[in-house]
Length: 297
Image (cartoon, rainbow, N blue to C red; front, side, top):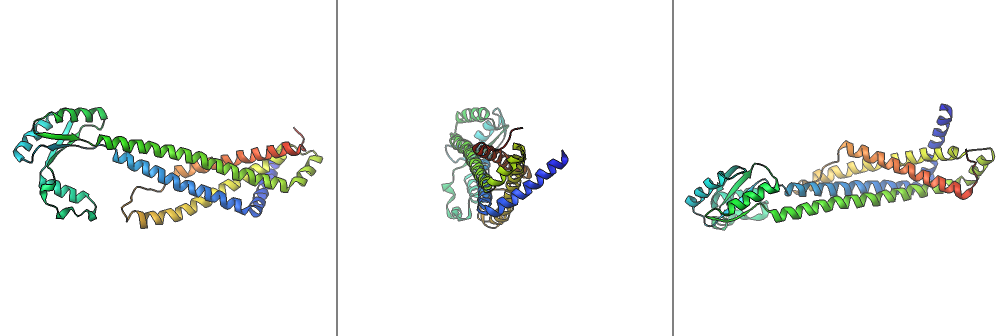
């Protein structure tokens, strides 16, 4: 049994080499498809994670009706005793300007603006980030005397969460499309190889070859084709993405994309190999049914 499996394994290596030499463009196409999937996956997951980060309401802003420090102190005292408030800090107009200058891009030019353009506010740190907790604090704080507006950007958070969910839908759709592309490429690559050896397969049938004898080498061949295509795509991706990310994107302030973890590469490689084997099986079985020349076990 082991010798028979070894023989079929070696024939699988031979089929892989022949498929690679005779259909090298198919191999390049497969590498390109997987490489592009890596790009779309990183883009989609990075964007989703960035939007999820933006949708986290860490603080609540209480904008005052006027910029009187005495009234602000009274409001601050009232805010601190509200339920679910962990901490609260008052920002005068001067503090608000300094805060804006520190957190805004360098090109914003906020330093040249007068302090009068920056409204004073109180920043609340809630005990947790649950929407019900945030809404309750907003409702209670908005009824305090001297308060003009209270907000934690709920409308923007909702939009960010919707777009983040859309990013994952995009990833799922892209995954399905790329999987179908891999199936199509491997299916046709194996089918072309089968037609190349059509006469040899007929000859095997005359000496009593069974379907597994024809099928198994192509399963191994497709497995090797899928595995090496994945390895090549991963190497190209890492060689192209890492320098571009660290030398171009991050210095430009776009620090939202990270190299996928090793788990991602392992799982996606296994999936690609499984798709390759199943595509090869489908292609081979379809071919054998067409020629109707192989004996059943």
